[in-house]
Each structure stands twice: as structure tokens, then as C-alpha cells.
Image (cartoon, rainbow, N blue to C red; front, side):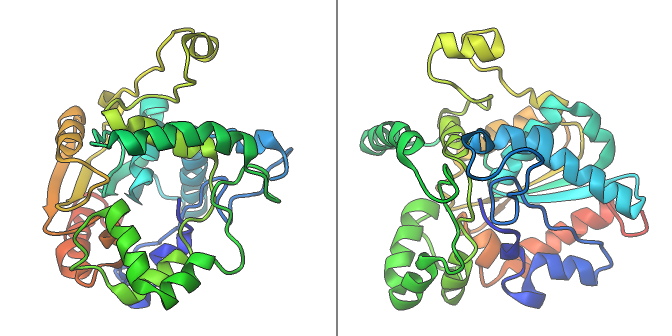
Length: 313
């Protein structure tokens, strides 16, 4: 849900720059609907059909196109992929639906991986979200039609977080994890300039549907609609046995977006997990803006890359 600039907001302290200085050719991905993913052969962002996507389309179409482009330009046989949060669900859905891409990836690194979730959500929050989604689908009307998180030249959240940092920290604790001891607070206004960066209501709804631990395709809400789309009354599950590439999983100990039960379930479901690491005290956003990411996170990731995706490949 973030713009690719979030990988660059700290300069030389960011993973993208660290990897480049280590000799890696670094590409920053961008999904459809985000601030730089709005070009389409036949549709404009004013067309409702443009916004008919979830992370499933990111996995089945967008990510394979990125990988093919990278391999074509670099003439490399394989690439490593690093993702945060929803990027994990995207990558898992890609290999579940298009397993031929196992031969094009030598390592997948997932930070705060969101897919098999098993979240405990209060009945009040669940009722609020369940009631809000039909309204959002029907009534979100901006210049970009159904863009749920339209990004303007200046994100108003960035200004608010600069003027009222404690309010933003309170929101972050509610949505990302209650412990903010590692979070670099001065970077919160910078991050909110690039996050969120545009997506569809369908994508957000699909992510919310994962809360019960079932990693499956979009649920259209009733048996007749699912039957029309899938020829069965329940959405098909993504088969994680198809994800055969080496996978490194990095979880945050205090991350409320990814449960311990979901972490265990995903690690057990994948056939080739080469690392499953819990970062002490990390919350969901710390993987991007924590003060101590180099030692706790980026150096271990570099070790994974040197082993499974060395620069001489």
C-alpha cells in the first residue's frame, strides 16, 4: 500500500541503498493503483474497471511482469525478491497461481509478512469494517474514481504528523503495534508522505478477509457470486506447497498485524523456509523506520542474500 519511495526515506541507512552498495542491482516495485502505477493500455483511473483488483492481481499479473522486465534488462536468470507486509501475500499468491516463477527467483525475503494472519479483532471493529466496505465501494468518488487512499502532491497526514506527532504515534500504536521503542519518530511524518499511496477498496477488503487465517482468493460475499467466479461456493485457497523458492521470514515480536499463530502456520505451510526470525520488540512499521534496523534486520538479510543470491550470479 506504500509508494516505492518508502525504501529510500533514510538514504544510506535504507536497505535499498545498502544492497546497492553491496553490489546488487536494486529495483523498486510498484503495483497498479499506487502513485506510480496508474498507466493502463485501455483504461484510465476514471474508469471503475481500473479499480477492480485486489492483491491477487498484483500477484498474478503485476509481480510477474516486474520480474520478467528485470530479467530481460539485466540478462540474469533469476532475481531475489524482498517484500514488506502485503508484499508477502502478493508473492505467495503469485507462486501459488503461477508456479513457473519458482525458476526465476532464487530467494524471497518477507518482512512482517502478511498472508496467513489469524488476527484477534474486536466485534466492534469487525462490525465497523463490515459495514463500511459496501459504503466505500459505492460512494468513494475522487478524480481517481475508486482510489481508496488517493495520494496528493502533499499527503495531509504528513503535515498532521509534523504538528501533532503524539497523535500519529497513538494511531500507529493502534494499527501497527503498541510498542514504539524502536521507531524513529522523526521519520513518521516522512513515511506518511508516501504511505498510503493508493489502492482499491477491493484490495483492502481482500486483506481484511485474511484475518481468520485462511489464505485464499477474494470472497465475493455469497455462494452465488463465488460460484460465478470460481465454479465453487467458497473461494479457492492459495496452495503454499507451490512456493518452492528459499524463503526467509522476519517477524516483529510486538507486531499486532501479524499474529504468532499466523507466523507459525505460514512457516509450517511453506516447504522451503531457510530462516524464520523474530525481531525483538519490533512492530509492523519498524521494518521500515526503526532506529536499529541495520544490526537487527538488514545484516541478517544480507547474509541470506550472500548465501542464496550472491552478486556474482
